[in-house]
Length: 64
Image 1: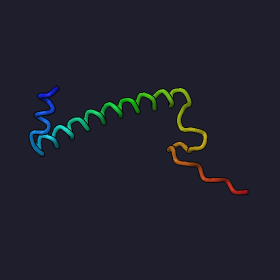
Image 2: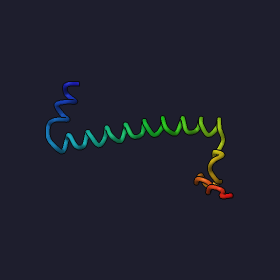
Image 3: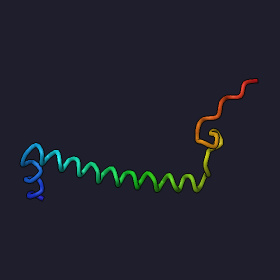
Image 4: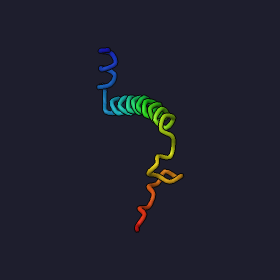
């Protein structure tokens, strides 16, 4: 672990490269988490929800 920190803080470009790489990995993990629960939600409740049209846009309010 200490070797990794030494490498990371060796210089600005090393730090930037490690930060970008870790950011990409974290973004991938969060996207997979989001997509999994979106899949379960759509599977459970269907798509589109009742308050949306077929494209997923909000339906216009009906005026009397």
